[in-house]
Image (cartoon, rainbow, N blue to C red; front, top):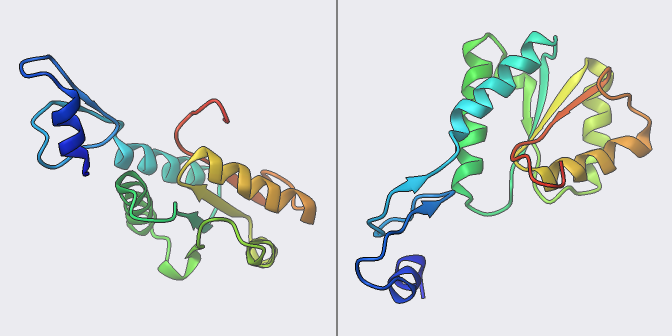
Length: 151
């Protein structure tokens, strides 16, 4: 049973309703969402203004629309501000052990910023970076997205 079908079953005809956090094709209700692209552009601008020039992007696994919008807008902003694509790396989620070496290697070349798609992934990044002794934010800047209670 897909989302539109579940909503039709749970929604009595004529009841006011709104969809929160994501658009659902086939559901005729207004949607209230965060502007994921704007937020990601603001994050990119902040990190660039702080002097970071190497970036690691941490996506959610699966096809999460908000994450795709965030990472696309982030990468586009970096490119528009003169950061070469070679300075941007995307790592798979969830955080694998291979991240330790990847983040350490990037941070040895230049201060590196990590942009994680959500707060849970941000915590995973912190757990990866802390044990290898990289200073935050001097060697590695870490930014998450969502402002959940985990933040």
